Length: 179
Picture (cartoon, rainbow, N blue to C red):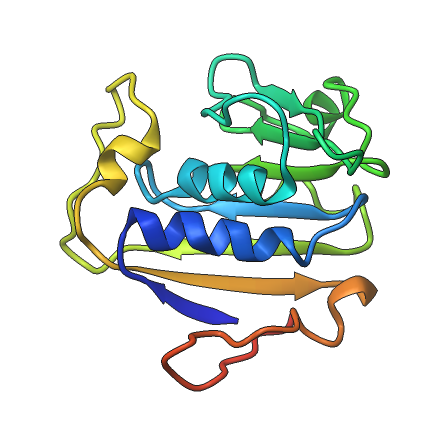
C-alpha cells in the first residue's frame, strides 16, 4: 500500500486509520529519516487505540508501554536505533503476543520475532529539509514543515497475505504492496 502524506495532520490521521486494523500480536516496523513522521504516526495510532499517556519518542528509554483505556491491547513503542541485535531487543522483555508493537529503526532486527509484520517506510522528496541528527527534538517538530511524504506499508506473513483492507490513497488508485 502506498500513500502520499501531505502534512503532520494527515500523518496523524493515517495512524488513527491504522489503529482500526491492528490487534494484539501485530508488529509494525517504521523506517524513515529523522523528522519523517514516525512518532507523529505512532501518536495517531495511540489515539486511535485509546491508550493512556502521551505518545512521545522513546529514544532515550528505548521502549514505552501505553496501556489501553478501553480494555484493548497496550501499545508498545520502541526506538531500536541504539540496539545492535535482536538479542538486545529481546532483553526489553516485550510481550509481543498481547501487545501492538511499533518499532522505529527496527528493520533488520525483527525478522523472525513473529511470522507476520507490517513494514512502513516513510520517504521524503529529494532535497527536502532534514532534521538535524544532533538535535534533541521529537521528529514531529521537523514534520511541521509542509513537505509531502510517501508512505509505503508492506505486509509480511500470513496475517497480511490478503492486504491491509483499505485504499492506498483516498484520492487515487490502489497500489497494493506485498512481500
